[in-house]
Length: 155
Image (cartoon, rainbow, N blue to C red; front, side, top):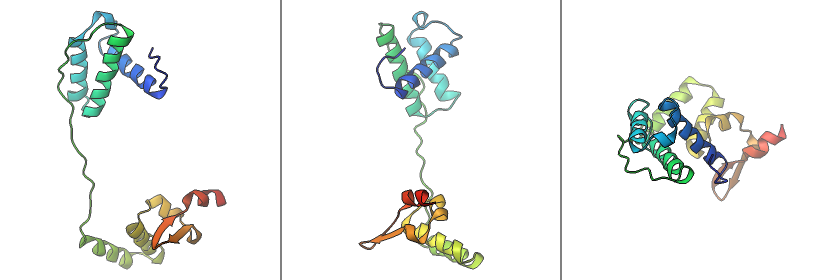
């Protein structure tokens, strides 16, 4: 349906177009226009609560469907916009970090204490820290990094 040669992006656009057609009870896109596109995009934002980026991707897929595949202009589309919320990371203050590490030291044995200190100091993920071996730690130029790719091959 979308012969751009972009692989997964083409499939995603085709899926969005199919969702649009199913939303309008299998009506052919030739029978529909800007009003129906607006209804679909508004439903995505209001009922399904998708992000603004997802809504924009759906709009781009439908514009492509109408202008490139069907060869007609879509017209002006003004849907209710999706949410633009930002997810802020949860971060501890400098005062909270030693308190948490102190609780780990008191409540756990040496292994978990070391894992927690390494995770705090150099940032590996939890799974990386669990799989870490002494020979996986590489010290160079005052920096610490983890050679986990080789660690999974060693066995």
